[in-house]
Length: 201
Length: 201
Image 1 (cartoon, chains in turn green, cyan):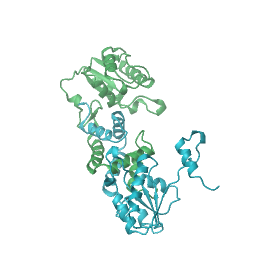
Image 2: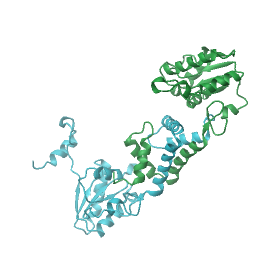
Image 3: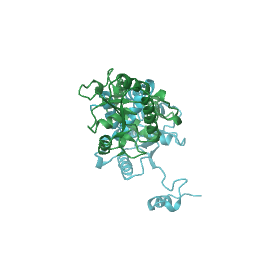
Image 4: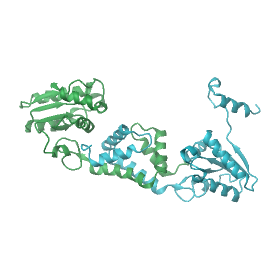
């Protein structure tokens, strides 16, 4: 479209690359950026840049962090004998918001999904096995999503850990959460029930 | 949420300020930014910055421009005796895409909307009256939106111009049934417009 300036076309295209943003929404967001005060628009640009420059994965648990270790691993008040395995940082956040869990985490950064070409090697499972073998964990809580892929990932991990010489107890979240749903959208009550009612894996 | 890093929280908040983006969508967009390659995320940040730094309004017609004058005002092939009045740059773009109109434009940057506190002074109506008075336009095409506010804005402008000593012809976009629509589903207003504006076959 020669009627749009080059900068405007480019911003529409960049917005349209975001998930769930179509061409029309991208145009609307671009007109919003054009309309708002310069400082408001630049705050968004700077926030994007800062996230890419400052945020990395925790070297222990692969949670989001702004230094080598995340805030949870650095927190001396956390129980260090219990480890909760989640797929994504956003799952960790959802669990933290319940206030029920006080142990450590391990973020897999995904789930085993053969149809999407995601195998165990692309996750942080090796690091998890090392943590369990070298650590002093009493219990490992599987908090993968209650889906076929999440359950499969948990099963794969529990099989791997059964070969590790460690008397660790493996539990999973109680099915207060409904099968087929997505963890990040469950509310606090549902997640609290699931944490409190966890069972032997 | 202490579990999110500061940069991540900030980006979620910035995304949530965009129109049509709620808290959950803002989180999803933020996780997308975290996941994609650094260059892809920075391309969006840079595109936002470039739009705010490079794009301004054309000094003649208030279309978007990257220099003092927009591409249409600079185009010597455009007809300079006909002026089309639109509410927003996006309306101009929609009209340009038809390829039917070859004249110049005037972008009001809004419409008179008393309920939203937008009066004539917040639009570019003064500049339009100046252009008509000082220019050599033969015809002015009102292409405001066919809504109560768009029609009201067009009426206000035509009243103002009737006081300007200029033999300009004021027209408006034809109203009728839309191509590809079904007669039985057109409402009374649409059919009234279509009947009143009927032409020789």
